[in-house]
Image (cartoon, rainbow, N blue to C red):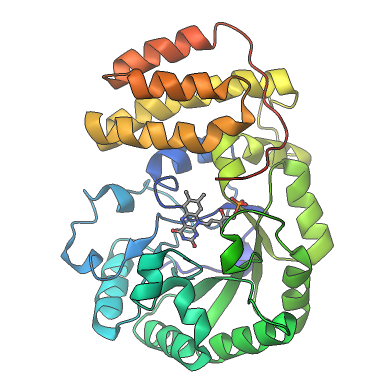
Amino acid sequence: MNKVDWTLINFPLSLAPMVGLSHIVLREIIQSYMPADALTIWPSEMLNSRRVPGENLATTPETLKLANETYYVPQILGNEEKPIQETIKKLQQWGAHGIDINMGCPVQKALKHNYGVALMGDIEYAAGVVRMAAESSVLPVSVKLRAIESQQSDVDLIRFVGRLIEAGAGWICLHPRVPSQQRRGVADWEQIKLLKQAVNVPIIGNGDIQTAADVWRMKNQTGCDLVMAGRALAARPWMAAQIADDMGFNVGFVPRTKQEEGHEYGLCLLKFIQLSRKYFGESLALRKINFYLRMTTPWLEFGHSLIGLGHKAKSTQELEMNVIDFFKYNHQMSERTELRL
Ligand SMILES: Cc1cc2nc3c(=O)[nH]c(=O)nc-3n(C[C@H](O)[C@H](O)[C@H](O)COP(=O)(O)O)c2cc1C
């Protein structure tokens, strides 16, 4: 079986797990911009370990995957032994190369059920969840977590992560915003650097990446092993081509200017609509496209008009026509937004 081997990872950028966004369609589009032999980590949308055991992974939209996605590391949410064991076993058979545990989800439901970021409130409990996952898996287990909200946040973070590693975590992804920040405000990259210096497992840095230049800046500033981008990589999937181009790969035309990026957004959106129809069917496709528009148009000039077109469309076909018309005019894309969503 093919497990994540960090010595083979040769691409510095990965996609963040995002509910409603990190599905097969977005992953296929990003992968279309990468050299064929580029190797990184691919997430799934977050999967609830209470549901996965009863699902058909080949038809469930959240677990659809491409034939050769390497490395595929789906993310699970949970805290109970039996569902976690069954979920991992099923994902293993489905072709996962690793399993990621969510310790960053701050929504109320996760707090109520004591999973997601709630796990970070109790170090032994969190370590217990990692141990049970690692013991029931032949695949490596990783943890994605947030910064700790405390007076001694650095010390606490390193102690917390140390226990997770003892319990079997093979690598750690840090999104250094505290839970009360949700996804706004500045991500404290210093914490990624501290963690990288303090532990000897691979560290993935996440938060505030909006451009290819940010990817290199985070890598240089923190020394992290891999950079993970969420919202901006969804909005500009060709960031993968910009990175490949920076590395000297020949990936054909690479959009760089505001105008080129605006044009490319239109091409990506059409691809997104067509692939959503193919994989999800008409009604789910429309919902997913509308969510994609809401999350990614803040970078696009007149993006709010596109959101309006999405809401009005009765079918993906109608939306496709309207998107073609919309992009007959040039639209610029800005480098940065305030990352409010
Ligand atoms: C719509 C949306 C859904 C998200 N869902 C998850 C999730 O299921 N699991 C998780 O670990 N993080 C989730 N996140 C957080 C992202 O993985 C990431 O940590 C965060 O967006 C910061 O990265 P960015 O600034 O590059 O977007 C979500 C983010 C967004 C925008």
